[in-house]
Length: 510
Image 1 (cartoon, rainbow, N blue to C red):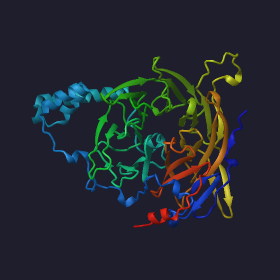
Image 2: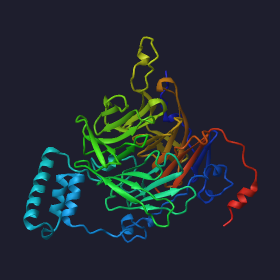
Image 3: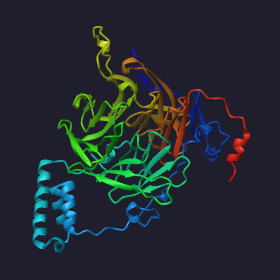
Image 4: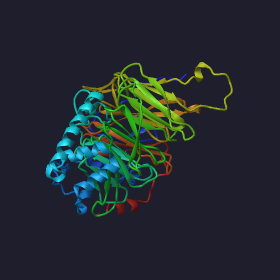
């Protein structure tokens, strides 16, 4: 029987002002701020392929007079007549949007009588919406807000709100507090900065698999799908806004592993929308029980889709091609599911927002060739694997608490390392996992606790996904409250060190 891992099993890192910078052959490496860029450091050779990123608060835009270039500013506007616009919107978005446009136009543009009729119809539609959909748009802060749904610590005030690695190359997208997205790429000095009038309260971003330059953004107005031109002197990127009535604010987006479908969800909507972005069309999948949706996750093979509601219900959808979409409903004892992630072989890990919480493992793979009689051990049930009860680590007059309510959880694509970020702790817990047959976790062991420099708190994180080039090295990218973005290498077995000092001397050349 699998032993439940406790946070007490971890060895506390040092309490000095140095930060943990690498975990190489089961040894933690520390470094002070002045020597982070030193190429002679033992961890530096594992970071050369990753772009260097740091966000300072004075670089954030406070007004639209920023020096960045918006895609819409690069093209001359086309002045169509109001009736041509109405015909286009009728075809693309339907009658309700036409009524909204007429009501927002000037009376002399559409005639006074038509404007009077449209304003009354819009008032009636809005009244019907409030009667049918009792739930109002979620605020960005306070009780029952977006802050309680997103997987970022202190989302409202954090310099960095979310980040995401591209699944096929060393390209990192970073969202800052001013709702602008910066794209950092390996070997490219130009950093495109994406901004859009609808890009407000960004909660989540997701790169499109099997496509190098498309990024989906979950924001208050809906879903923005950017097509990004990387490396140009001026950003020639453009965005398409996908939205549906009652489906706001969008707090989570995730692509199917094949890149053909995009899923969005909102805590104010009981439906998740399956988007065909090429056609700009979305199909709602609705289940009333459980209320609105917090987030969704695809399995790596694309045959399962996890959806967490705002109550204690979560569902696992079978999205296989051969069968129609069907959902298995599960419940957690208390609270609601706060985090979840898929590993290899349809292994699902999830935890509720309870304090203290427990991480459960749910195997979803079935062995169709196993003809033995089923036993209790073979039953498909959630198994507790990690206890997140708070633990205090002390040294002299200082102590640090690890554990409690979980904010974010990331599992590297190989299924070997699990990173956990807590609401109240300044340290990130890194756990070594091993998956056996039938998608069951057979072993969990403590790896290390990751801390930043003095005063820094972790806000969000993401594993670099391209593991096939060097399966011996895994990289966890962490955003800290100071604006520093750290690439934390995890090396199981170190290769033969490089002894040619000419390489280092060439790097130090200005």
